[in-house]
Image (cartoon, rainbow, N blue to C red):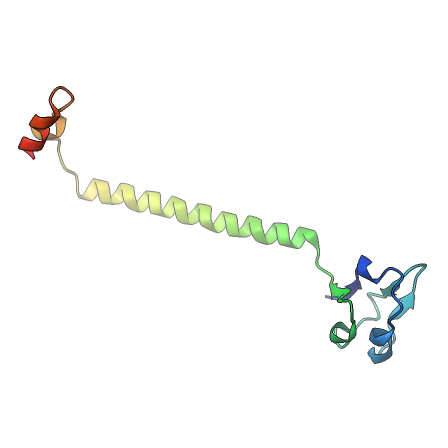
Length: 116
């Protein structure tokens, strides 16, 4: 994983990061510095030297999406396992319906309190 220079470096006059780079992988573009990805050795020495914090790791946006999709897949599998466990538990501990399970107390709520 290499490092890239962000837009915060546009028209930046600081060259501290260039001076500390051991392999000289910085090049001047039109308005800003750029890091050559094949020459960068990922040492990270330039990051603390940049006074405007314009140097960050080069992250592939697809990698973040892939990570989130894999995490979602794990949660979905876990939810399926919980549903299977719940179904198994219901089958093991089957309880038949009794008359008091079927009572409705909509007519007289006071009667419901006395029965409980």
